[in-house]
Image (cartoon, rainbow, N blue to C red; front, side):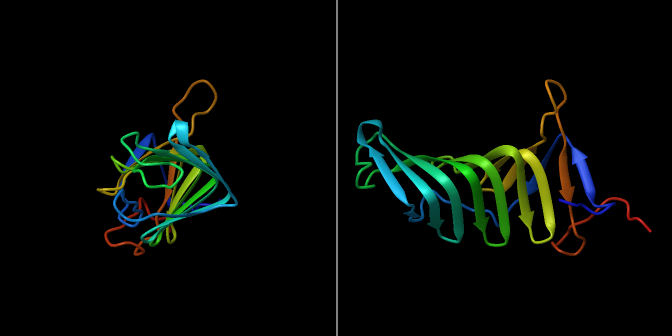
Length: 179
């Protein structure tokens, strides 16, 4: 990825309003995959191969997704129990409205509505605006996010990179403008 001079920001972590990225523990979920394995005794279902999940305006894709069901009744085999959390891996892609996030693996807690994406490189974009780190934690209820940089070796906290295009988002600003 190439970021233009004057548009790159780096710091240990950042917080941002992510109003477009949205999942909800309340909306119906449609899941499709090449294979489904149900482990009733473990209250989980494992979807593998071209996994696609749609919930409202949100699309999630991955190579594998494990659905953990709440242990308070219902059946993983029929999907009639409440979903506790989702774990996804193998090229995770999440799109909601104008925002896209990608990573190697992720979790979504349905009760707290917290999405965590992690990997060698996690990329969050909204049109031309891009945020890169190694761990993205999003509070879906509020749109608040925290991005952690990539650790380099055994020491150092790593860095977060951000590229913002002026005028692409209301109130967006950049640092020093190059002339």
